[in-house]
Length: 389
Image 1 (tube, rainbow, N blue to C red):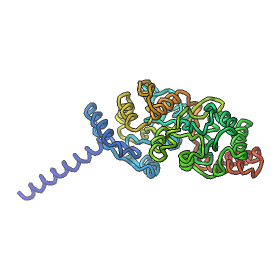
Image 2: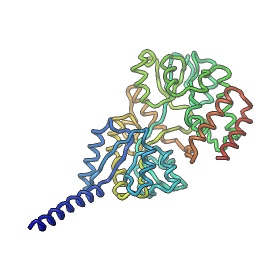
Image 3: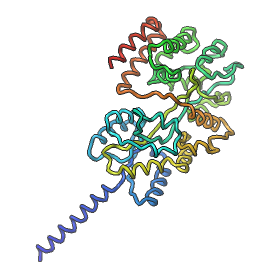
């Protein structure tokens, strides 16, 4: 009798164990980057999708600082998440390594076409956009001194002598800022005549004192501080920075207005993006794709945009009145930002050694501003270093 009971117990435990194991395998695992503050929204969307599709989703929110490291480890394993929220730069690196699932073009109908084109790698698509940001020009009306708000970097340099403060702190030695500016001019070869002209533009402003000496080292954070202290006229940033200015420098905010971001000769705009990828080894690729398209449908995009002040990537959402009408500074910035997404090509594509490339270019910017050699000679050296990579 005892032996029979023992067998029954073993069978029951096996059923419980394997049943639980299969249940976990059937879960769609979804990773986001630092979206915990919007848990009520995320949970609502997940619950709605689960109810409509009979799919169980396990949502894990990963800190920004750990996102790339944990993702790289997971996609190389046999049990990666099914859907991961990443930035396009790291997504491109994973695509280069063959670690991502290719997404068919017919799944992109709901998105802004320019954004989709910016995500393609070798003509193929390995990610879908989730949300975007596009900086505007925040400026001090009083310090502008009656001048027309410039549309390009060249126009800004021309009116710089007439301004009542430094024109801006362009943070051109931070991350890939200078490369993004070159991208606005359509520069493909860093040692070309057009590239030299762009570097010379900033060198000239630096030598004449139109931009601060700290430009060689300081970042976006210091630029914000200088704007709030009314030491610079123009500050290029996302609309969310207006809240910081309003809270920390109300007197400056009272003199503030917004305009489109500065462009180069192409008239194209810069933008940043967060996207979704599906690992090549994911177990639930079709459901993951379906969920990504659900997260980016008109209704869910518009709700997320209103909660966070990010830009939708769903074209129907971008055509909504929310992005057409404004009645205050924040909503004006939002309308300008959304309109800028209609002209964002050609886009800057990430290379395998992007961090090393940024360091080489940013060191060159410092050398050029400090007149360590001729711009041509410095860029000759940069070109050689980039080729060696």
